[in-house]
Length: 492
Image 1: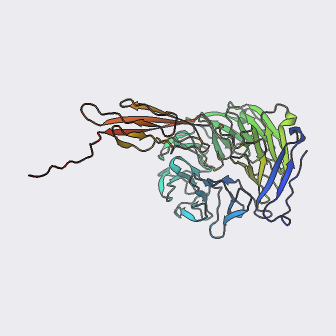
Image 2: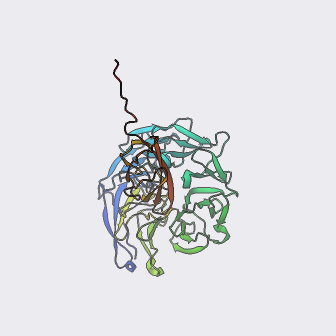
Image 3: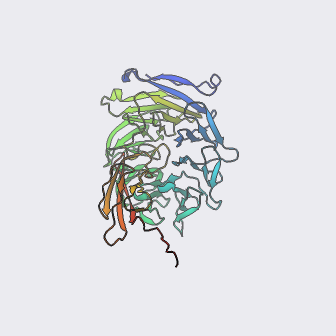
């Protein structure tokens, strides 16, 4: 059974609340469809992001960037007349929203709509940015370079290649070690180190298009212009391509990757395909039109996506009965945009008819955090980064006998840190209050008989929900209590 969500904008002012009865095969479960925002008849709505403030930010086909309150109270602000955008946005952990503007500059906008900075007019940018370690913003430019920008003021850190040109055709994504992956129209996938040097160029021509995804083992999955999904090993060698084993799969969406390594991708033939990490077909889910909406995986075990047939689909991956597996309901227009999943389980998706919908399912509890790449551009902020960043804090100089606090709270991951682990690697052994805490303490040891300072080195390893790790170290220098004191001697 399919129940239709009907939009009647003349009857409702800001918000339409509709109960949508799902297929009877899910025992009469109900979902609420809320019209958060209407950009106007025929104005295409692109893929929304959820900012650090919990509100929605979305680009429309008329080059506006809208901020929309997630609680359904309407539009927060709009940028479009003076400053219009030409790419999907991404959001930093501090709330800054980044997007390419129509004058081909990278724009940083504060949550109150004020402009934080714009890049130079000498750099033309039109593709969505990615956000890496320390908030560094990566963007592909039409001058055929990949740029890294400081998040504070938009100044350039580096560009690749420093000399020569490379016409870039996919938005960048960031993987383990801060390596940036990006496709070029010369047919190759490039891996660029976080300092702007080349790590590798793929060993075979991939002909990349659309935004790649990265698995927990470092495999990069990228759609090829040759109607294939390609798997590239973390060293740049080709692992497999789907055209060799799945004849009908012609990818139309970006891929996502589940914890068990399963890859999901929408196809031109109206199916979403599930592939094993080895490239074989595991399952496929039918719609009635092209699926360019990148799926999203939820904690409740659902695969969610839109279709250009105008229906939104929820696949219960835990259900073995095929007749009970898929639930559908209809919206007001084609769904080519990709959904974003909020922490409370609300799913947000825009239609080509200008409507941003919020869909609440009673059994869904947020984005699947243990999947290495669970949605379009990895997460609800579209950071396009899937690894944790360990930060062991600043080096400290302390006195013997002091209570010292190690500080790993600056560590980050787009989907959250699961665990902290501190180990001491050098110096006089000390006892940590809690080696699994983000801020353990210890008592600085006494100095040796020679009174020389003691250096203690600690290593912090952080693990994210997908069991991916990163590590950092800090050094604590212990001095004698009176080492910094000066005692004057009175003159006779």
